[in-house]
Image 1 (tube, rainbow over the protein chains, first blue to last red):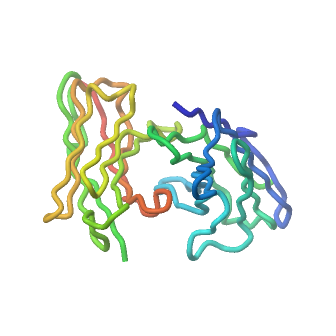
Image 2 (cartoon, chains in turn yellow, red):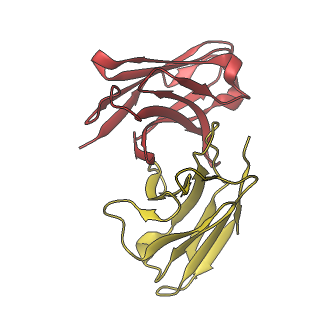
Length: 113
Length: 117
């Protein structure tokens, strides 16, 4: 199984500042034949299901604000929120869908400083 | 517009079998590349991937739960069913179904299942 490890576990950032969440996979999730990284990021607010933000490591889902961006390749990935808004308070998860089981990271709780 | 809705019992007893149904609309499970997966989340904890069924009836399971899980689809009814045998209190969680296209694009609201005698 591929193990997904996020850092940090929690993060407090001031409004308008940048937030960065990291995700590392225990093996590469880059499929060489199509050059796609099978890595997604989700946002989960209390009492709600997860919401897909980014897939293929860097493709923003339709309707997701452009302050959210994903980067990285192979085993190391980053979700960046360029200018934190109050509505971004949530838990963020990365997930690999390169091979089953499609494992998730442990989550990163993002709060306002 | 894609929607998914989970249904099933909210309370099961230890050792019983849980049967959950995901009823969806807005996409077809006959379309190449499409899948429907199940993910659960114990209260206050992280997401755990359980199972996935693809358009071609390819079925995948979490290795740690494989002996207890069965996933099936009824394409004509737009439903996917997950059964989990021998339920235990540690299986108490919110169970989600999700539409898999690029990542897991769309999720149901989830259903909380409590395992208690």
